[in-house]
Image (cartoon, rainbow, N blue to C red; front, side, top):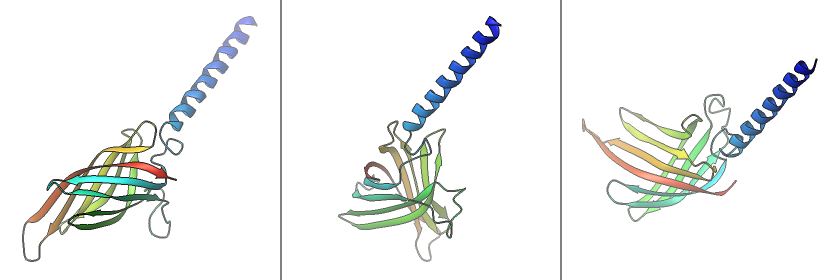
Length: 157
């Protein structure tokens, strides 16, 4: 009888510890471990031409009338400015919890843009961001490609 009671106590303690570890890990990754928090983020980027971009990344809730919430984490919108002009993009985003990577954008035969970044451990920064923008000039067979790096800091949620 004593062995059974001891075994049950040990199993109970293991279950409690596992639950505490899972809760702690979830608190480290933003919204319950499910990716970057919804809200406004301070966006900073620099493209391969040396142009610096600053503005706002808004991570918003997926509109089920436009996109499948089971497929996408959020809607990601960037509004940024530089000395060369403005930038505005909006795409549904996905989040890979195993790599902590947020990805959004699309690129096809005529061009497009793709953004990726890694969510920091505290869930307040998107870092190591990469982006690629391509356009096909009218009548041209070649895509004009610009790449860059970016990051964003959570400013409100």
